[in-house]
Image (cartoon, rainbow, N blue to C red; front, side, top):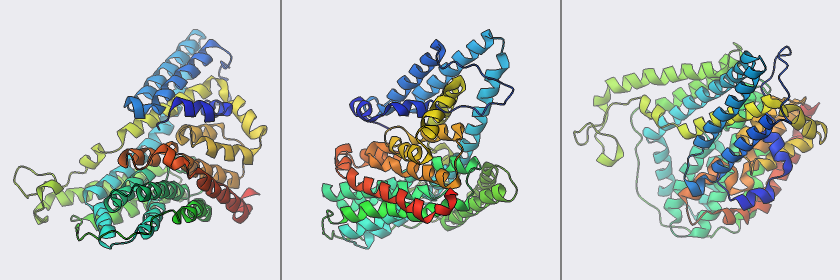
Length: 478
């Protein structure tokens, strides 16, 4: 996430630090961790985390990958913690704490790795290219494309991640919009809002939603109670922006893209993998990651079949596929190529965040943040604020903090914080991975200030979605 320091210090409330630093390992009753919140150790650890996070937010200007500073920060924070606990003759306590954090990270990382591998495989099989070419070939007008790309972003992101979905839809917009910067800007805003909203009602649509599901706090099918609030969050700003979209019909393209052999079967395997993960969790009470890794085995087995039968593949143009040296002869499918192309910077960033925030929590900041927000403000106000903060602070550490604080809340309030953390990032272009990526992809057309002009409309959708959730899902609040 990239943003200027001036914007951060103007918008970031004091409570943000309490939330980000509020995550803690769920300590065993007999452990009795040391309270280091008012010691130099605590202050130094907060300083390390803030410095690392400032470097993360400055990624757009420094071009330093966001995973690097948080990984170093995590090592320094836990190194300091271990040193203090060793000096207090408690050498194993910090070890047990960091192992707990590592286990939580490993489950989420492996889950995401399988999902990313499937998405990359479908991209390699040209599934997304075929969809993009079909949309361009139909010759839709700008207003039609505005709604089609936004709606597709809303419905694809629950299965794929919001980043991949946004990049795919933006490619369509750029191909059709050409030099019409007004259309490109509005369509990109619409895509970001749609992708973030679509990810909020599915355990697979966003990392924060996945975290809540894997914790076992909300059942898989219960998340779909957020479908209508998420749809409202997307439709309200889209309806407002509709009339600003140029009413022009660009010239259609005749290009066609054929999916590669096995593409449809890989889509079916991905759906089977999702079903396996859900079944393992709901019926066998196993972590969902076990089902996902089983699904990776499905893909590996099918990849072996594709590799052994590569002779059946049709010759293609040299720029469409990797070759083994003979022009036009495709190399057999290798499942480890999609694995290698996973978003490793994101996965490692997630590691750094989980351990940094977990370390700050272990120092003793859990009670401070929980008392300030969920006791002082009440669950509803606290969860709405979480969404506003997610437009400024990355929603991963924010949600991880909430989960590890584990306040006493009804299912309705857990759904509320899932909704707000997911869609709150749409308020600013820098508030989500989708927005940041599109600022790079549509550079000059989709900008921070171009997005912020429509923040009031997006805010109207944010407020409306919260109201709708509290009305139609009132039974979950009891």
